[in-house]
Amino acid sequence: MAARPLFTATFLALALTGCGVTPPAATQPPTSPSAATSAPASPDAPTSPAEPTSPEPSLSPLVVGGTTLGEFSVGSPEKEVTAAVTALLGEPTDTSRGPLCELDSASHYSTVVNYDTVWVTFAAADAKKTSPRTLFNWGAVLAKRGLPKGVVMQDDVPLNLGWKQLKARYPDAKSVRTGVEGTQALRLPNRLLFTGDDIPLQVQGGEFTTCE
Image (cartoon, rainbow, N blue to C red; front, side, top):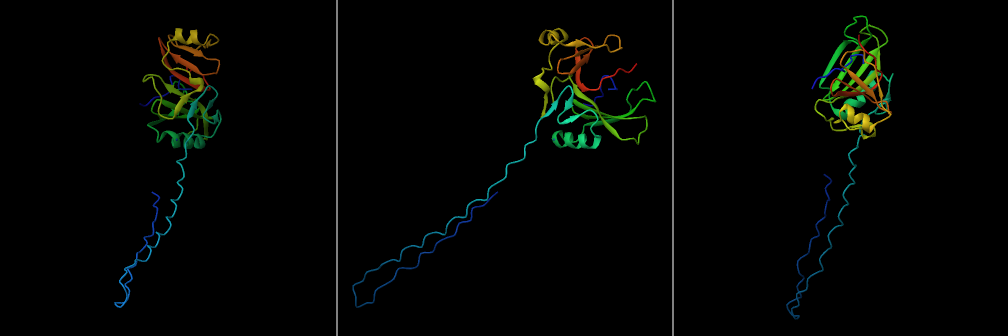
């Protein structure tokens, strides 16, 4: 699912066993009473212990937070963030480039990288395509009411609540002016910001600015 932020400003061990061989039975000379005796069987060679296997390295979940995305915060280099997120979530499902605010061609140049329902925005310090970009904001689209495997919300914030339910659950949450008629925004105490219309449509962290 390709998505751009509602406000575009916005990762057989084998055990080898030796085989003992039992020699044939020894026979007494004919003049003596026959007494067929067998030599004792040679014990099997000791079994080589299986080589220890190293457990698969487990990656920490990517925590979508109000002020951090996993271990990264606003201003982190695009290359580092993209490498870490891609290692956890796989290749991006979509990438878009252009002005941070689509209504302003002189707006800072940006890249939005989508990983299914999760998006990450990187912005340059100016409008040049060649300028280095850093982490600007990030979030999750709520249309599917779910997150990719390996992604969790900070403080286990639920993603299936309406505005009234969010306000009841987080009484200290603050409404934020969006400048867009019919659009609401609610910032939780942990700085996660829900935005949408009649219902919350996405949740994000990092920088927030309107595009008017």
